[in-house]
Amino acid sequence: MVNGSEGGRGIYFPTAEEADEPRRQQWRLSMEAVWRRASVVGLCVVTAVCLFTLVLSQRMVAYTLHSTSFPAFGRTIQIKHYFSQSWSSSETDGPSNITAAIEMSIEEQRSLPDLVPELGGTPLRSIIISTWRSGSTFLGDVLNAHPANYYHYEPLLDYDIVQIRGAPLAHTALQTLRELLNCTYANLEHYLEYGQDHNWLFTHNTRLWERCIMHPQICWLPEFLTPFCRLFPFQSMKVVRLRLSLAEELLADPNLNLRVILLVRDPRGIMQSRRHRDWCPGRPDCWDPGRLCSDLLADYSAAIRLARLYPTRFRAVRYEDISLQPYTEVEDLFAFLGLSFHARVKQFLDTHTKTDAGGVSSTFRNSKAAPFHWRKDLSHKEVRAIQKACRPAMKAWGYAHVLNATHQSDFNPIAKSFKLV
Image 1 (cartoon, rainbow, N blue to C red):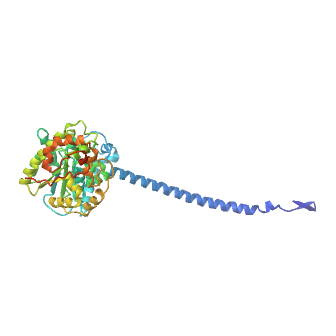
Image 2 (cartoon, rainbow, N blue to C red; image 1 turned 90 degrees about the vertical axis):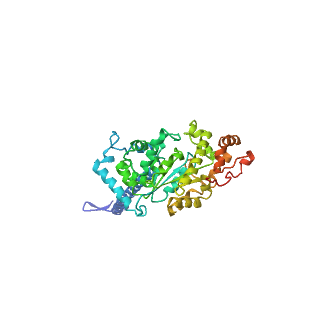
Image 3 (tube, one colour; image 1 turned 180 degrees about the vertical axis):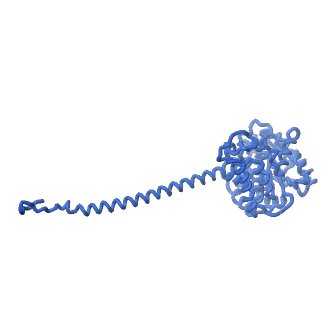
């Protein structure tokens, strides 16, 4: 601004806005510095969130694979010796890496002394013989809760919905059971091939499936399965497709050191439970109460004989007795099998016998109510039809008959303790 003149030159006076410009410039520089620092901090925060999300997703994938059976998953872990389907380099990385993974898994298992107690000699082996929907999955998981146990789940699953009562199926079925009880997988090509599309053959075996998740490329290899299986001093198995009389051949083998548990259930409860399975209707061995009770009666006759021949290595139990007194009955069964009532077994019972959870195949049940749902789920007409076909078997195993519809709703179906005479 020019307010006058001196020698032809005016004297300049800055405006207030111009005078304030240096201060504004300094403020802008300060704000830019703050913005740059905020950008750096924001970038760090975004990076941290991304890393957290990545780690969380990996953990969720690992958890999902561990807790769920995926039929497709088995096809990613083929047996290289038996199948021509190509593997990606990440699945094999050559024979040397497969060998290293096998050796590492075996050595890691050896390093867990609480899972490999030094018992020496022949392992203690046990088989649960039962039929579909009789509580065998629950009892098998109870045995598997023991940390030194190796669990063979449903090894005859590939026989489909049939009961094996004799020739021609009995020979190959018994051979499969014998091979597994001896941890000999080299001759079980069909069993292993079938298992890759039916992962639950292995998923119920907790300690084996953990290794399969860690090293999927070796999961179905006999070179891994045989030595890994032999690390465990207790071998358990549950079978629902083989009738009891055929198990005598295995009991008679002194090299197996085998104990057998026959698990039976009230046929009314069995038939009610089978109604909820889509694989049962139309299959005579599953859907016909007459066949079921014929098997129960034949099993009773075989049980009398085996109890006399092998009093210390054969036991028959009812699902209802285990359900009503799970701790007492399981502790007694473990004593029979030569197993300690481990803290993890008690923990399993604590979490699986108090409340209902999951679907029809879940083992989380209110154990005192589970065996008796049939009283409300079946009509009296349906109950009468089952009882008509099952009268001798129910009498043998100690199950009381329903008299009428009113009686059905609240009566006690456990008439008495059965006695093998």
